[in-house]
Length: 99
Image 1: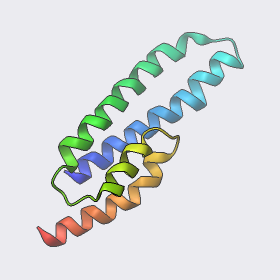
Image 2 (image 1 turned 90 degrees about the horizontal axis):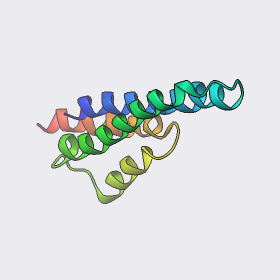
Image 3 (image 1 turned 90 degrees about the vertical axis):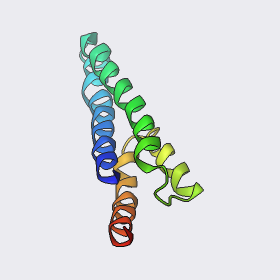
Image 4 (image 1 turned 180 degrees about the horizontal axis):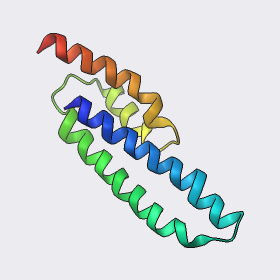
């Protein structure tokens, strides 16, 4: 389940980058605002999916309060999900050894 959540986290991070590095520059620098609504909607769905998947995939897997907080905060910052992924990878390896 942690592996599935890691994939969802990468997708959420990619949608953030698409919004910030493609859609918003197209709007503000090139006067092409048409990309923001669809990319924004995809990112919004990915963000909600990330939060729901966090509860579904990580509940009962031995995450500390700090790890829950860190994983939640990662979704609010660009590159956050990518920076949080090594911790998730370690937790995935630990759960494979234990269970």
